[in-house]
Length: 322
Image 1 (tube, helix red, strand yellow):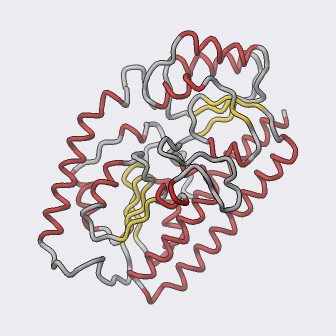
Image 2: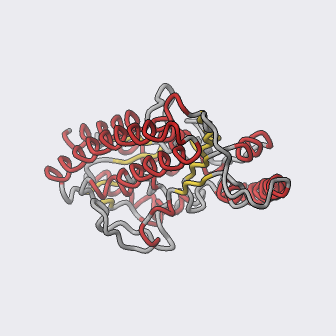
């Protein structure tokens, strides 16, 4: 959990230094390999390295017993934007057969290391069609994926399903003897994704246009698919996302929405917390406005992406029914 003294911007120089070190180490490792090697060698038990446990859980659902999955960041009480990889993490990236990461500068340390790695790479943000502001696949109308896109694509259920398919494809290239197994697991995972999306469609049918307020633009994709409209002050959410303190004026605007019951629920990121978000949370509870607590990584005791999102959608369902 980020405290007032811990700011994303304050860690930028250190993160850049570590990222440069990772890149240099990765280049040295590749230089020792044959120049003709364009990918990892065949491996009956592929090694997958994911940037966070969210993406690791997707990879694990696909890889099952025929893959080894490691997640570099898996702390439910910390902010993944502030993660600084160790040299041990660097070694894991170098040894991976498949890398699964968010992209969009959310996990820049892996993005940089991936450039010099022979591992097969799955960059979730890169799966957004054309990287432009429009989607032509089902369920993505109105999402903004331009240059200023919301990088929290792990709340884009359809895209997460695509990541599962791409993971199956990559694992099948490394371990072709298990290719059908991976495809079957990805299909089962996508059946679960379809079930979650049906629940969002049900929410939309009953609550289309309902207004809510988010402390940070974490679940924008999910809220949009559910037909909900986030009316929190944009400057408030942007400040929280950038590790800055929202202005007093923006805090006042947000609390006014709550006190006047202009929003049906407060959408609260428990991993991006500062005095302003705590104030908003306290006022919501004081005014009996339902609070939906969301996370950027898996909560303690949860290992499944589907279970994680099912629980969060359940919170949303209960809040809107209150």
